[in-house]
Length: 576
Image 1 (cartoon, helix red, strand yellow):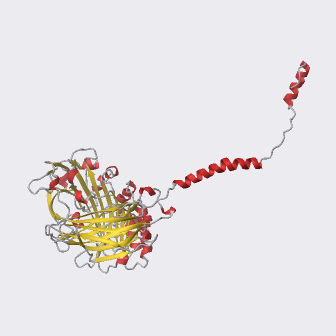
Image 2 (tube, helix red, strand yellow):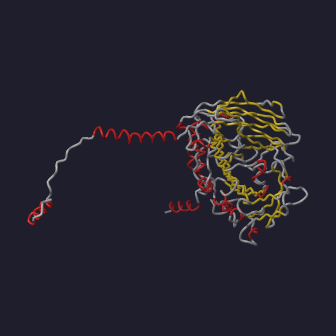
Image 3 (cartoon, helix red, strand yellow):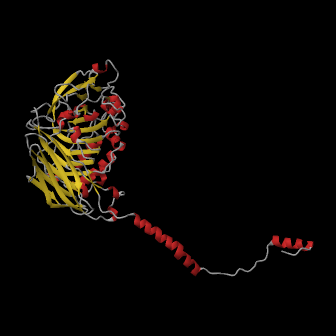
């Protein structure tokens, strides 16, 4: 009886609280950043960070409270050191919207660092992609050797970076992946409160996918608990970035609110969260005049240096008792005091674009333009190009031109493709002079595919994944080291080592390339013509040659006919 009572108490306490003496400390922080964009667009960035003081690599964890059990067991079983998965629909227009809080390429992106104890990285990578495909209802099971590369310089560990080996890294992109509600639902189920409380109540699929840009991501990495880094915690960040276009949604005005964007308002915070805040960017675009007015009035303001610029944010703390005293819900509204002049919009220091040129279906050229708009600072950038094997690159045609002169890369790594086995991998470290445009071109030849290798819509074209740019962008204002736990979550997305620059990773547009495609309707036409000839001509002749004719003897009448003749005989009528 006593044992049964203890068991019931443990079950009532929850799986994460069983064994108070050995309970592990975990914490949840949720945050929403609202940033007005030019032309009336609004960017909403959700972040849910779960930090757990546990050692998942030893496999001794049996009780989960806030950290998702599916991801925790995945990290423990496959020896994952870092995992970064992003599912994106649309393209972030850097020149019009500025630097994104956290950008990702169109489609599905997955890059993973494995532990040095993993002997067969390719096998673990394949198994990991299949499991994630089932968890997030995505086509990650199509990741194989033909779209997987191992970069050497572009992707460094975001967590503990001691003893890293690039052979333990795998990177893949599926640019054709379509993101829909089936991907959002399992992503929300990983949250401790789901979509029932806190900021997650705004995650209504009907509104989120009616937007110009949608990107959801999952980031898992180990972090140090203190400065000495004697103990390690595991951090899970679930981020969601959405860009709403108020004009295309039928509102026709730049003024917006939470209810207009999400069709819902905030009523309470997640009871499991230790921090739940809403930040609204009210920084003046013009230093002399304020452009925006936010209601209800915020209880506090927060100033931070983000992306090298000083910004002001209105802060709404959902855990504050005074926030919901006057009303039962929080509906943040922002109104423009006067029209915004497009000439006041600052141009991003670093942005890029890419396109395909050439004519015909034999050869072509990939061109990438990288812009450095800083008036007097030059800085290097790492460019990563991943090109499918059926576009055969001519590396000797690679040219890098800056201000009319050749710009030789400081570092270059090229791994040629193998037909139907692996793609091209090209990494370069290029110095970008101040106020310059760098043009990178490389020619390619289109290969002929087997008829079974074409997609169901081959005339639509074949996608080439986005280029990746990694750089330390100079900061206009010197940044100071701040306490990560006390600062907002979005400020930690731009790490800085010396305070004079911040790290940015950008993605260019994915390319759509046409390949020589046969007319797949011709086999159907040939089959129809052949069947017609066989059925009409050959069938008729064969039927005439093999048919046997018999003379049918006149048969005697039946019982009815004989009875009729008997009656006719009595009547004197000739028989039938």
